[in-house]
Image (cartoon, rainbow, N blue to C red; front, top):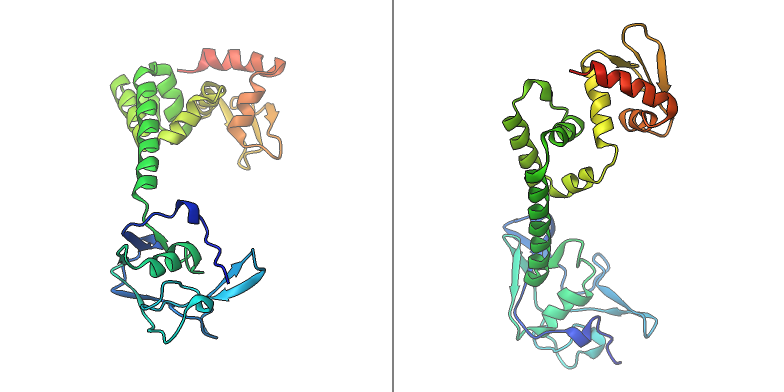
Length: 253
């Protein structure tokens, strides 16, 4: 039977390293090396429409039982301290682990330095972009971001503290920061939160409405499927909301 190999055209002869998922590092972890009733070791061959039995035999070239010939010498698969290094001359074991084993991606994975470098580089580029934007942010935008995302009481902070905390936030949460700076309602959300903190307006205990703090006159009802402050920010842009917004802006300290 001709074997179908996943990604066979791009298979590279090299040493490979396998790691347990979740950064687990037990002293010894055993991966099934042959099919049994208790531990199935089968791979479904779509080209043939059937499941094929797998087995790691140290004296065979293929991990498929139907391609192994003569007397076989069974091997064992052990991860030590969460790691298994397989040299390039053990192609049958590498292909069993990298292409066919049912625990691949569930209990263990192949370490890919190139892919890890790509992921790391992408994150670093995103971090650099976030830091550049944070460094250029004016103080009002910094205040808005910290108010909305961290709940910081910026009225008690100096401008240098606000700027520092904004840059630190961008460094530690670059993706979240970049998403926030694209939010056109960021400043309106911040204004609403400041107005509540300063006792200008109040949010109901259930978070479903806003009222004037001085007389409890209802301003707006939060739609059922929305969060309070994004809903308030959207309402500020309506005809009725713009009048309240103007009044709130005059009262904000």
